[in-house]
Image 1 (cartoon, rainbow, N blue to C red):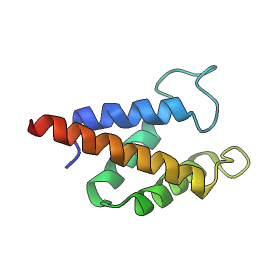
Image 2: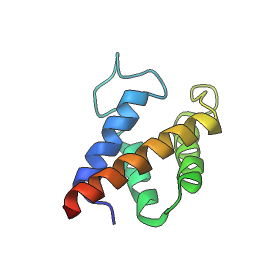
Image 3: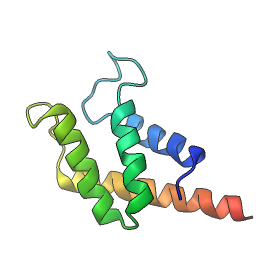
Image 4: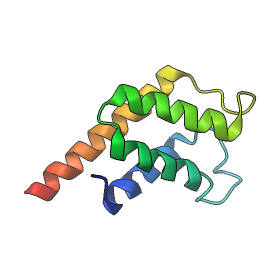
Length: 95
């Protein structure tokens, strides 16, 4: 299950990625809705591939293909970062 620490981590990864290049001009919570949608995916998606497809779909739906120009491969990289980071957090919590 995803907890608050994991969501903060997801926010950090998504904001660092800044898939629409908005954060230089927009508030730091610009991707709030998309991050919440990714949170919901993490609750049901155990593998990076499914999460990558979900990330792509979330941003594509939110911003459209004219604005969201990232590829499925780029979303897969972000998905793997999220999963790896969450795995580290979970291990640290168990210690």
